[in-house]
Image (tube, rainbow, N blue to C red; front, side, top):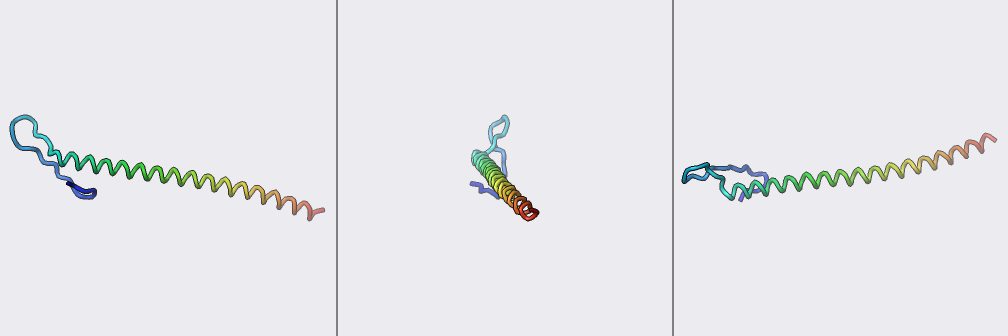
Length: 82
């Protein structure tokens, strides 16, 4: 059975006329490799989406804290002017 990362050779089945087929083992190996690839792509996408949500939340918190600090600095500067 082929493993991910190994090359997969598809050889026609010899025998009675018509179109030669593909060995079942090759098809199953291909489907497993394809499934693993799709799973890896989806997992990467979901990690990226999760990271983007975390970063967006962090940015929102940073901006909120910055706004609060700016207001406090404005109050201090206004107090110093008077």
